[in-house]
Image (cartoon, rainbow, N blue to C red; front, side, top):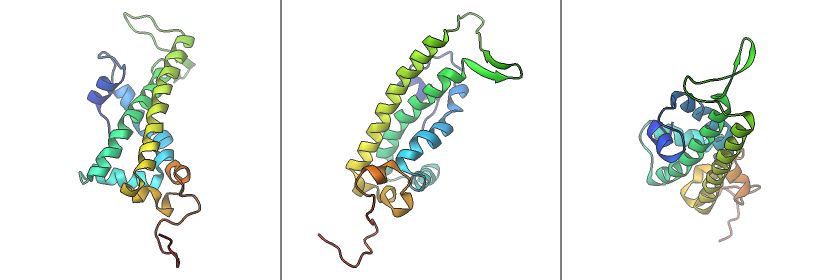
Length: 170
């Protein structure tokens, strides 16, 4: 969701010969473990519902454009280790290609860390974007979204965002 094969190939170093299904399998995990903590379960669920129903707003489309690179790079991070090593009946097994040489673990970890840096930059850009444009994303700052980094890092913690207080200062 939010990204497809073309996006992964165009905006990450994932090569044409990679079985993209082995990368795409990680997008949901990355969405739940990396993107949801930033945006919150409540807001991400609402955004996902609109995306799947093709009823996104222009503001939704802008935040989705910030989600996509974070999701793509996060998926590449997961794939670097999980495509090289598999848990099998005999324990962890190293994958080998017919006409390629498998990278050593230190090389794989170096590449994973490099991809991780890209993912973190895009995750920070997502957080900064939503914080900067918080009036466009009221669901992100709803009290039901207190589990999010946007809620706690954008000055909303301890505040009510539904304006039902008896006194409102302008």
